[in-house]
Length: 97
Image (cartoon, rainbow, N blue to C red; front, side):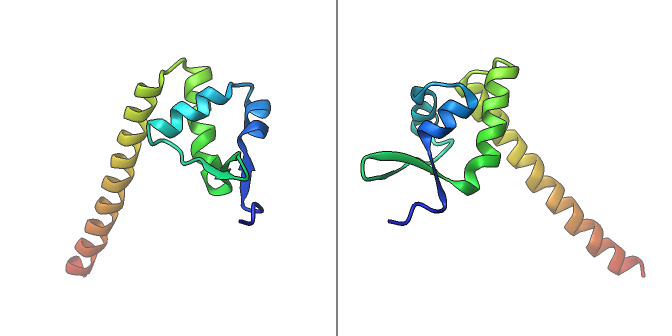
């Protein structure tokens, strides 16, 4: 498997100054997806934005893993509602003209 689009978990641990167990717990709770290639743990590069949010919540705000899961779910629902609101506004504009 080509690892060009993946980042080793060890690199992330060094960068964010967290333990590997933190990422394993995130994987167990379904917040990130860890891939194994040649017995090395990786995450996809596209996950970095989400990982940064998670690490900031955990380290800066001292939010536990369960709290992070709740916050991410709420943010996802807010995003879906904003998208729906925009779609409804656009339809309303069609009827107003």
